[in-house]
Image 1 (cartoon, protein in one colour):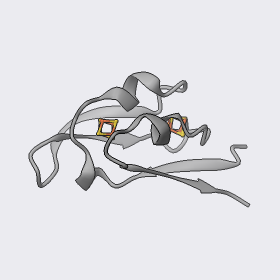
Image 2 (cartoon, helix red, strand yellow):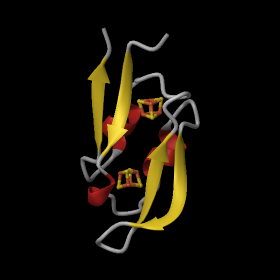
Image 3 (cartoon, protein in one colour):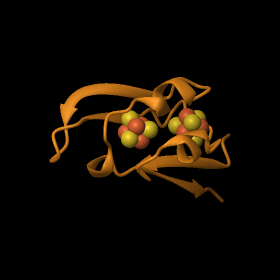
Length: 70
Ligand code: SF4
Ligand code: SF4
């Protein structure tokens, strides 16, 4: 079981899609849905996320938070 999980504040997303290619588990899905700024957002598949933090490190717009699990 993963020791951490990522969550995303997609209101900050600017659609660069870097996170989609950097996630080692293909847990980040690019969506057609737009945020309030008009950018296409992403969704994290919680089942696949292992909390590695790569999305957190690569995102230029601070969308991700890594939560440590007990
Ligand atoms: S890296 Fe950040 S800004 Fe780029 S698509 Fe992913 S969540 Fe959005
Ligand atoms: S924490 Fe790692 S596994 Fe989870 S969404 Fe981010 S890059 Fe993918």
